[in-house]
Structure formats: structure tokens, C-alpha cells
Image (cartoon, rainbow, N blue to C red; front, side, top):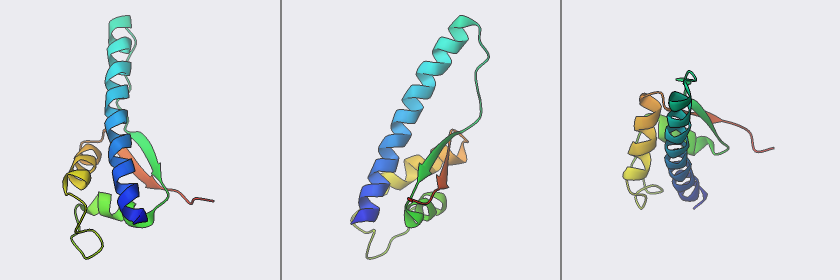
Length: 91
């Protein structure tokens, strides 16, 4: 389903975001530049995906085949203010 693909894509984007933030922070700290502590905004055009990410794993007939790890990792990053998932219209 579209929701399944969006959840996995958001999970992968979150992983990439963590990696890029760590590289950026390492370069900034070794150069003496102040590091940014604001969350990185990830835009998502699937409203169900954004809701499931913010509320956690919601088990239903449509999401029962998606492993909970795809929900929990992104939700933990958002709770720790590393990322912020925002809904944006696809148009």
C-alpha cells in the first residue's frame, strides 16, 4: 500500500537525517562553530503516515504487515526533538 511505502521512506529518511546531523555536528564542533540543536524538519505528504508517526504504532488491518520498528524509531527521534515530521500537501 501507499501508506506502507511512505512509512518505510520516512524511516529511511530519518536514518539519513541522523547520519547527516552527526557528520555536520562533528565538522562544526571540530571547526569551533556553534552546532544547531533545532530539530530537522521532514515533510510528509501522507496524512495517515504523519498521524501514525506521531501517535506510534497503530495496529489495524492495513498496518498489521508493517513491522513496529519502522514506527518506533521515527517516533523516538521526534520525541527527542532530533526530527520533526510535518504534513505538507503534495500539490
